[in-house]
Image 1 (cartoon, rainbow over the protein chains, first blue to last red):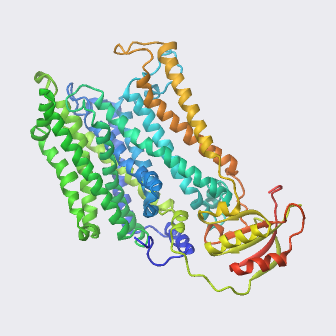
Image 2 (tube, rainbow over the protein chains, first blue to last red; image 1 turned 180 degrees about the vertical axis):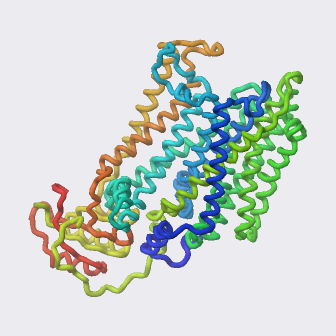
Amino acid sequence: MHNLVAGNKTAADVTREVVGALDRKPTALWWTGFGLSFSALLVGIAAVVYQIMVGVGTWGLNNTVGWAFDITNFVFWIGIGHAGTLISAILYLLRQRWRTSVSRAAEAMTLFAVICAAVFPVIHMGRPWLAFWMAPYPNTRGPLWINFRSPLVWDLFAVGTYFTISAIFWYLGLLPDLATIRDRTRRGARSRLLAWLSLGWNGSCRTWQRYEVVYLLLAGLATPLVISVHSIVSWDFATSIVPGWHTTIFPPYFVAGAVFSGLAMVLTLMLIARATMKLQDYIGLGHIEAMCKLVIATSGMVGLAYLTEVFIGLYSGNQYEQYAVANRAFGPLGWGYGVMVGCNVLLPQLLWFRRVRRTVAVVFLVSVLINVGMWFERFIIIAGSLERDFLPSSWAGYRPTPVEIATLAGSFGLFFTCFLLFCRFVPVIAIAEIKGVLAPPPLRKPGPVPVSRLVSEAGS
Amino acid sequence: MGQRLIVAVFDHEEDIRGAVAAARRAGLSIVDVHAPYLVHGLDRAMGLRPSRLPWICFLFGLVGAAVKLLFEYWTTAVNWPLNVGGKPWNSLPAFVPVTFEVMVLFAGIGTVLTFFVVAGLRPGRDASLPDPRVTDDSFALVLAPAPKDDSIDREVVEEMLSRFRPVLIDEQISMEPGR
């Protein structure tokens, strides 16, 4: 990939096009997407209000299956976020210059996905107004401190830190671009807001030098952070004794799955942003191909994890483990296992073909189906394992209720509403980063110097 | 009254590199260089010291981890010990995940806030751009008289910079004292 941006653009072209995209009226495609997402969000809000008023009894849970739809959605959304950090931090450390076109959108995706994820444990509490009990603060109940040995408390800290660091990383990357928009905006409320948000950024190289160091440090911090977050999520299950959950492969298995589903989501969003904001020059077929290759790689890791799980389960010599493996593939949720293997391992193999990788419609379809498969993976692991534990007398089935399905639809509504608003108000392409990877324009011949004889004041 | 400054604007990365190197060779004091994006190696060309922010990051991380570990020990083993599943009061291995998260949180927030403070970035700060194009596509070199003699010969500077294709050379008065 020699030219990262098509069309021989200069730095001024980048400013004009990316900032200009924010000033144009939204396209019909954008309004359609926004209308659909916002409607889904409203349905979700209604469902959440209803289930908080009536109680968690509106869900399909029973004594045996105490975790199902809700926690599946939590794990699914947290996983989506991880590819954003992979692209913005890990690919930055690996000096993958093509990431500049997609990093901003991927980081935004991380933020919105973590917000969607955080909704679910909070509503699962049943009394979300007591959520602050999770924080370690001196209280009148003892003080009865939270239990730092519990993976659920680890989760709170992991997700909280992840959200905070991702938000800071995103804002830091946005800082030079906010200044660029500020200097192109006429005086008014928007200009004052941008001046405030851009913190007086003036492109000073003394600041740029420190900025690079801070960016590198944050990338270095975010890389182990992202691995820790999904490892901790997997410990919610792995530290229990439920057959099918109690395995040491869970942390790497969950991290690989998270990055895989997140990459598929980045691909989906890239293609949406490309079409709705007309950014074909910045997000070219080369970028899509690079993403597809990462999808194949992570799909392979996920497939390896599936195989390992089956092998270790059968090899364990433990009848409960062996039964859990057989039940996963051939039990009542066996069809879901088929969806999961089909979408996550078999379907991505199409991306080995260059023709497929360069056909946008097929790539879009594959990326959406991968996330269907990844959602089923979490559902099979969570509900499927709980349905069949040690005592056959306590076996039960689980069916989601319409309230739970509406909540899931609402989380997609929240995610896409946030993303589409982001496309309208924030430059989708990291302007300052893209300018650094442009091919340099041809040099002019040295000529007479246009010199201003005016003595002016700095900053005027 | 502020300091007299000479601002030269360029529109090419190669030119600003050359101009910075030439200005340093001529012994002029470079107040700052403004660029629309991160130009790699310009900090070395300007003779800037490497940033000490990695140390700040390390210290914040160390403080975060230490504080959190002590806090976890104090709450579970000292202040209100509670028997959870027969686990020891001081369950050090189980404290590792939260300690790690808090370390990352402290290091990240601390580094970014320190960066804002040392770079003087804050809401409401006047950007005072030497040229409005530096956040778009141009580079500006801001020169000041050498510390010893207070004069800066405009003609000499123009002569020196002319081979780097400047688009504008201008005189400005710095409004920020001690810049």
